[in-house]
Picture 1 (spheres, rainbow, N blue to C red):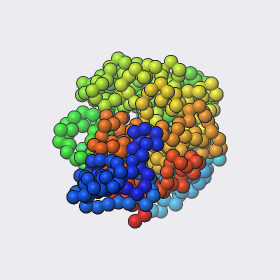
Picture 2 (cartoon, rainbow, N blue to C red):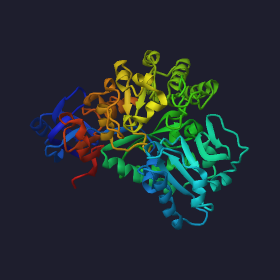
Picture 3 (cartoon, one colour):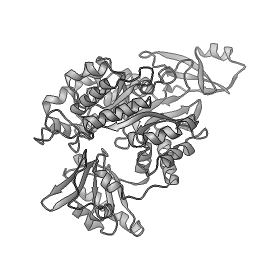
Picture 4 (cartoon, rainbow, N blue to C red):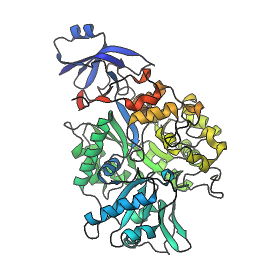
Amino acid sequence: MGELWFGGTIYTMEMPEETVEALYVHNGMIIATGAVDELRYKYKKEIEQEHNLQGHVMYPGFVDSHLHIINHGEKLLRLNLAYFKTPEEVKDALRTQVPHLEDGEWMIGEGWNENQWEEPRIIHKTELDEISTTHPIMLTRVCRHALIANSKAMELAGVTTETKDPQGGKIIRDENGITGYFLDTAQDLIKKAMPTHSQSFLQKAIRSAVEDLMKNGIVGGHSEDLAYYGDFGKTYNAFLETIQNDFPFRAHLLVHHHVVDDMQQVKELAHNPYVEFGAMKVFSDGALGGRTAWLSEDYSDDPGNKGMPIHTDKDLSALVRKAREYNMPVAIHAIGDAAVEAVIEVMEEHPANRANIPDRIIHAQIMRDDLYERLRSLHAIVDIQPTFVGSDFPWVIERIGEGRIPNAYPWKKLLQHEIPCAGGSDAPIEEINPLLGIQAAVLRQSYHDHEAYGDEQKLTMFEAISLYTTGSAYAIGKEKETGKILPGYKADLTVLDRDLFSMTPENLLQVVVSKTIIAGNIVYDGFA
């Protein structure tokens, strides 16, 4: 079916503020762009439907380059702790859940962040024990690099005072023993004792997440979910069963190194046009919030602590070598500058095949001047999360000190060094709305004190939108297929009720998603 779109502003994202008057779409592809009368005449025999944008504004479809789709769905379905302001509010919310649980059922909370509390502290296991000693309780921190567990959860997990810290993780202790606070790989000690999810629950979480993404104008996401729900095949099948022609969404799935062998067994059988495998995912360090991101110098508020690597140099090298043997790119989480340096070194040791999609470094929140040129020489992209600026400042200054601020969240520096960047939310860690990310990239304004941090790192509106269009397309080697409104590109489109280029950035969150279009199909209509 041929369709003509016209009647509004249509940005190609080929160049800043380049627009076309209309586009003709057939079988999910953009066939032609140009003047509406010319397209109507040229394709008059094929056009079966016309869409008048009524003055609204069309962009290439926004793609979130880094998120966790199932986790986001879980957040929508479970107790969300992200908006509480005190430990007492968190505990009150948990108490309300107890009467609704079955005997022995786990109580799970998502997204707490002590840096947003009036009293920034970590809840102790004894406080959770006061809520329940019969229900295991597990509360995941917003960064997903830390959790709190009560004594029942620790008992089921077999964690005792004799349990040692695993490589890349830490069990926090005080004078009375284990506090219930587990960092990075130590979280696995608790998570292994949790009941596994059914495929039907995973499908419900995926559908909830994707519906929310579509409402926010997002046509696709690069997601990392496949290693966390007990069985690779079950999780992968949940995506295949949920995302289909009648419920389309571009799901590009990163593959954690723990399940990359499983992926190799099924990759040739994958025929779903909307679900595909991406790079091998590896974690090289933790997060700034829990002081586990790996820095080259001590944390300013914790002398003697530089954070920690998740893997030894030898093990990290072996993982990247394995990816190369599978002819796969790697996507490596690296927040601290020491972690970024280690990742650069291993990418230099095992260069990427430049005929493949690029490697990616996820986050790169703390850099050093000596790292940019080395990173530029690689076949790699940096996967950034602009909303981290809004969430992390000003408290992150206590962590890293004023001296490291010029290379903190250095989005403009990366682009100035011609290092490609893509934009994502890391949902459920941050809100899924790409307008929040675009606004954060342009304003660099804290959500806490509403001050701007790092003016020299602010992006232009074109650069910010490009993160979610051309940047996300380049990250998966599809820069000639998606991310622009040009003939021969997929008809994945986002329509907003206002023009981002003509607005003051402070007002971006007033914008309403008018339509989300995937393969030419309207999958969300905000004005229906």
